[in-house]
Length: 87
Image 1: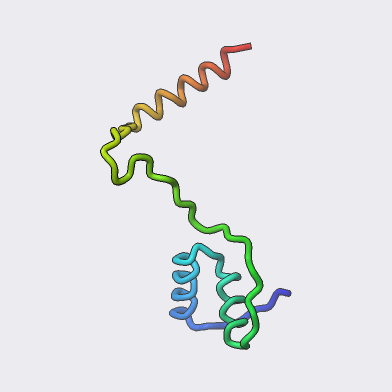
Image 2 (image 1 turned 180 degrees about the vertical axis):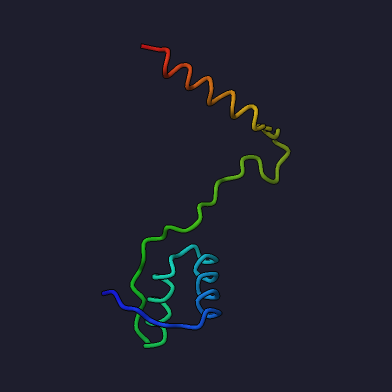
């Protein structure tokens, strides 16, 4: 159900910041906060938060991989050439 509420600008900014910190939408944060205030269980939400990528070799002596913007540009250009000149 949709509804409109008025809240102070500082409260809205703090709510948006907290939602971002938790990797959730403002809607999910507000629903969770109201459920908490009313003593109701919060409905589980699909987590669309931040993705943590694995760090290969993190904390080890494994060799590092250095990729520059020029390397990425060259790879994308080669992919385009292959895609549009083959067939």
